[in-house]
Image 1 (tube, rainbow, N blue to C red):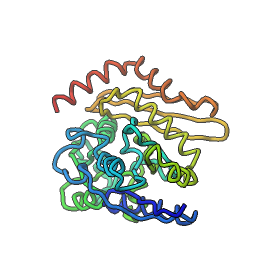
Image 2 (cartoon, rainbow, N blue to C red):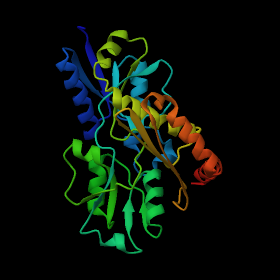
Image 3 (spheres, rainbow, N blue to C red):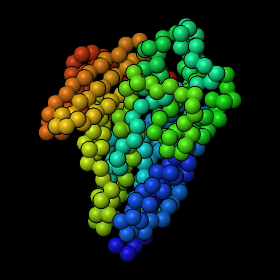
Length: 307
């Protein structure tokens, strides 16, 4: 393939790291890649909670438009930011091998506040907020928006005890401080730690190139997680956690749907043969809905309208 593959990306440090990873990976295979930076609405509006300005899709729409206009050939995304329904004519070209899936608490001074009824923790994620409040119901959660660098800076400048981040993002750009705690009890966002490449459905040469970067095991587990999210959400941003893992010929899954205030939480865990993975996410979502998820989702939607 002689043409240069134009790689669309957001212009944050983490997004650029991901785009350069794809560029280097393509070049190792003999393809030429060129980085094209695009600013997204989600990066520009930092003073309003994410769910109030559109939730998922805010970080991807600008790149979708650039692709449809022929300005880029592929787009590189943190897969957890990508809506489960891609725009017409745009398809998943590859999913790269996943990094760490866990969330971490970056804290200041010490962790003594975890043993008290008082604590102030920052996060812009409904999922992280809900799960934190479920475990620490008396703590205060404050909104935190911006790229990784901006959020770390805000943590330093404000009188908070800590802030929650994805471990993978901090590690990728070498910003994971020693003052961090892995939140192994927190169920991550669907597809957290994974990178997706999208391309136009008709771009056969580009799709052929990207296919060589696809990591099959990651593709399977994130598909299950996103299937779970899609079956639950029904178009509404909600505090949903999902994590699937493959071990031998088995696939295990853990999912959670939380109330916005963390007061209630519905969990599901299941393990099945890997050959049955194709509908595992939907099956688990249906069980959650039967266990009270329908009423909880209705309540979440009503509360979101008022927020």
